[in-house]
Image (cartoon, rainbow over all chains, first blue to last red; front, top):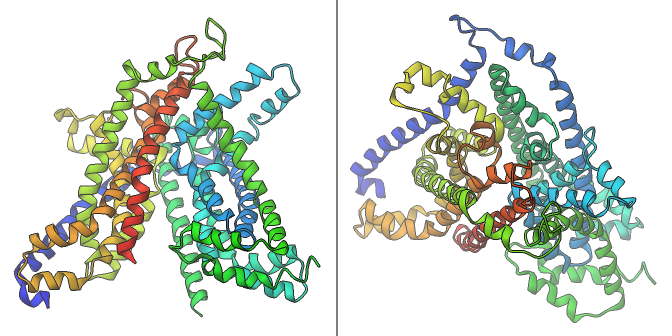
Length: 279
Length: 324
């Protein structure tokens, strides 16, 4: 209809649209291409892949990667152990709990990570300030163990809470948990059994996407770890980048790929869920 | 007694609770029916349910509550290295955090966030419109998935990518000889360009659903009534889009305001930004006796971010009305 009436502006729009897309495509493609080129340039007119091949032997690379992966795994476990019972409880037994859980899971979004970190530093200072002569002091030392900083684990679980909540809440929306549990209970299953063998398998894709999101978040997190003085992967890239620029750009390209893969994985999970919900 | 009666009232409770999660039901209306029914069995399962949320509550109290208390107390008391000893009430942290270099940094952060969010909105909207109305499905999907990646791509790797591109020895800088024109990435403008790299995709992701909610019929109706394209946008599309646009702007502002890693890896504290100042202050880079200054700075930041969220949430709710 509209096309018949106003053909001229529309065709002009189409050209304009192509132009807009082109300019922005350039803006977004150039840094990627330039970085890729930068990471393989040998400054004699040729190419070298040493930045990628020598990565594994770079000092501290494997240690920091290992620490990051360890933290990511622990964060996923703690997060799910804490969040899933609360969400199920809110669905199954106490609807008044739902706004409470929702607020608790949304508040971390309001507070910028830097500000949260100041709070953590403030708490950690209580150790030497007030608890120096009490057995509590050992707790403060233990959670800051550089081999496995529990304080980072706590911060990461908190940061991942809003995203995991959204993923799991979305998943729960597609499943009638109450009916499932009642059916299982009528068949004689206990509450824990009903949850473990009936509800959780139905939430598989939501649990998986919450976990993937959390792992991505932990692997990329820099602020808290750097301020508190620990050295997981992202902090290592920053430190090491000051000595070998080429290798740090190579790592950046790899991490862009990782984000891409993670999101592809998520959308594959999402479409899988939609398909199974329809059938 | 305990197991048999519970399953019976529960399904009824489900239906009265809004079909277990119909979007849009207010929490208040969900709570109401259970309050009217003080049945023994129901009450007990409710109590047990609160037990299920206990781990989350304990964790939240430790992970979020303790730092919040530390900020609230620390911002208003003297630090332990102060001459008069720690723990006495004072407003000097807060006043110091709103003066001199710290105030400049707060202003710098607000300025950078407001500017980048504005540019991101102004560029993101036509881009999203071009994508949403594209005839080619593949263009649409490619841009949207690309936006998803770039909006989530930030921090240190983003900084390094731009250093490799537009930094002093970057490929584009040397290739085009940009240095002759006085180009430097390590400035306010340079940082803004880097931030836009994840803010524009974020805007596209945020605004595309709203643009897809614009009905073709509205455009046709306007055209049939003799409206020009400009008039259609001025009187129909923009008013409908306004809550989503403002919401997107506020979201971008928040993202840019809270960003730390990119700026830290790229420029350090050479550009006055509140997040950099906090990082500095936390690393002990303050005068003796001002150890709690960082906490006051954190409080400033939370207040700004909280105001931003207070604007964002109602806007998001309003724009959701049009999308359904």
